[in-house]
Length: 75
Image (cartoon, rainbow, N blue to C red; front, top):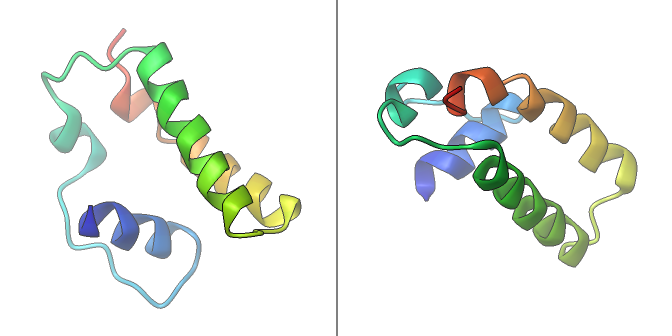
């Protein structure tokens, strides 16, 4: 989980540097589908709501993460 936090921190412009593998390498062979991807997004939204993250900040992060869809979901 620490790499996920590190990655989100780096993607959101935080002070972190992501040191993990690429999203393609990390998810290769996992056969992740749209429903699974969406479930993670829903969990992330719930966590941000629980942390009282402003909706605008949530949307900005989700916009950045949406760009990774093609690197994570196998078609």
